[in-house]
Image (tube, rainbow, N blue to C red):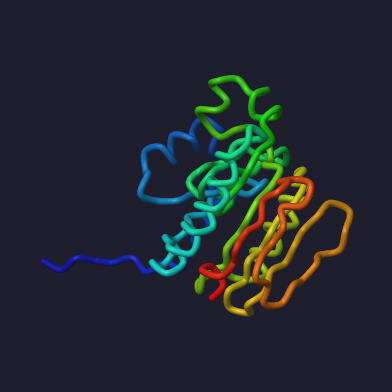
Length: 196
């Protein structure tokens, strides 16, 4: 018996009319897949990253979590955390952080689902399959929804794009470190094992 295969292109975008509850259930019932949803309701099925990108993202997350553990300023999240943005979209940055007061202001039910807010800090780490233009659009969406600091780490071009509200995007070529500035005071990301 011949088995048919479906060839798809990732990320796969589907126009589905799902309520917030249905979208959350879709994500919970398909934990081996990663979903996002645009503000217009398009569901995006994200491919898993390659092993190398997964390792580098782990190093990034490790540093963010280590810093978060040294203070009581906020809560860090990995790439599996989803957020319900003010524009209605559901996004899952590669790494993110929320100020403690904002996180504590949520109900326990809100914390258990997709927290209804945009993180204060987000990072997107470009993998080989990621479109730079789409990631830049996503970073602008974060800004429009209230992010205070965002980093787009572009391994292919060995540079970082820094996004801040009300400012032009700053591009740094071949940086060794990045400062968390006043959003993450004292946090310095070592890019040695991430960009190399």
